[in-house]
Length: 178
Image 1: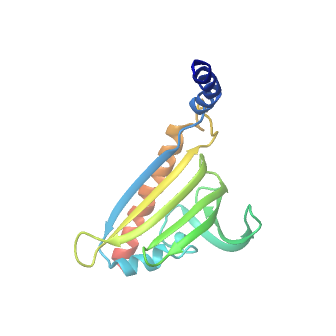
Image 2: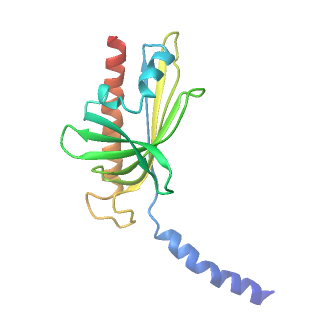
Image 3: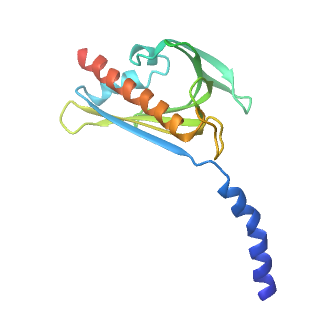
């Protein structure tokens, strides 16, 4: 029995050493209440090709079908940013019943890797209001525990917080002006 326990202990050492050197997943959640019906807000949020209509960092959105990693055709959007650079994002799914859209970044200028996001619209705290929640999960750009400056967790989190804060502020402004 002691031999079996010792063997199990030895076998788990490489697993724990690997886990200790893996980068930690980061998470950003932002929320805004908009004075508009959830249905009206959802109509704009779910339009995968319309982000340039409400996010001030996006100059242009181009929708295109591309093959994904599995070889299946999937909806992608190529975002051209006002400050220069692009982002290629893949649509994972849109669910009208829960007013949820999910997508991931395939490649781009943001200092992140493994990025997946969900935007969800729900009824707001008062009548004719909507709450929009934007949640992103990602790793730093280097995808390393000891990432260099500019590719580290703090840089990744700060960038996504900026994207979400700016975008949600302007989404509110655009929808409340209609």
